Image (cartoon, rainbow, N blue to C red; front, side, top):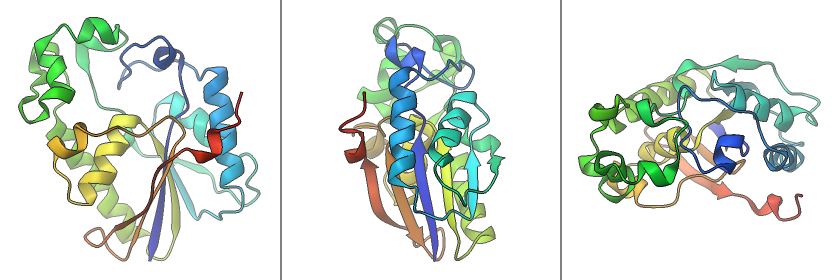
Length: 209
């Protein structure tokens, strides 16, 4: 059985400023983001990972390094290009409140079945789900009986994990997304038989600064 641990990156400056994160903006972690990643590291310090895969974006890599710092048996980071965050095109780095005034972007949450980002050069849900599932199938196939850590982004990982369990985009996007530095776990013998063992767990963040 393969075990896959998923962690969303820590809070970033853009998160703190309530701006739109994405595939092309990449600000540093805040003090809260650093503390959250360190807390996740303490939570997982006894877990022995065989492989670690991380988004090419710096916020995810910084998080992964902090998570693995107390883990003496941690393997080297491997960059997985498909893990990059969903591309929000022209809206990246701009205010979420401002973005909600655009009917096309507002459908992201309120009407995901009809979300069409072409007017602002964004990425479709179908594209994110497809690259996420392809990567997941590859990892489960290539690393049977291993424990993998995957560090990435809120929208990408939420879609990746829940679509693997059979949820539709509409079901996924009308529910809360993964929190910063949350831990989720899938396990199974094949990509078609994965089960959710842990979802959006942040109990270990209670006492961070």
